[in-house]
Image 1 (cartoon, rainbow over the protein chains, first blue to last red):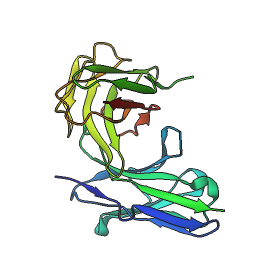
Image 2: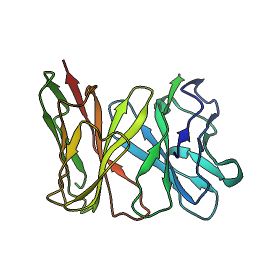
Image 3: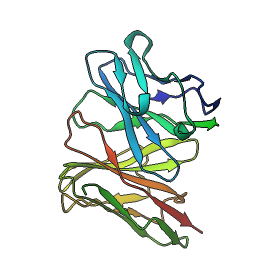
Image 4: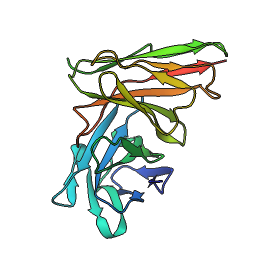
Length: 114
Length: 113
């Protein structure tokens, strides 16, 4: 069965540190890729997405992610985190077949200290 | 404002009782989804519906049932057959069955004792 792996369960950083959250998926075909974020007490919201084209995608709040097809990866990055980035981050994959739902990773909790 | 509404935010039930969670959207989306979120488990798909009067089981459908009689509504019933019903339940929608992102509601936290 297809799966999504997020390697870090909990990441703790100081403000201004750089962030990289890993995401790998197991599916050999074409995929759509997403990063969602869940701030404390808020809705799950989309950070960025990749459907096709430039493998480096930019999202909201200074986040970016790079799709590396050969590594089945879609890592999330931010050069300098802020306290307000404290949240849970989910990587999700959608198989490129019409009608299929998202497959989510287990999430990474990011704690940023000021 | 367009969006997804889930009510109530917190729900408490006794073991052995069925309970129905509400999900309404005014985004005119065709597809709707139910996920369950448990700590350290991520989101797991319970059921999804791509059009009215049609729905498919997700990865963890046992003990749950749904209906899709109207485009804007996709209620989820947690039955007494669900062994571990206490969880955070999220409803989502997307434009259609094609290649679009999903939009999420605020969730309902169900506690069964």
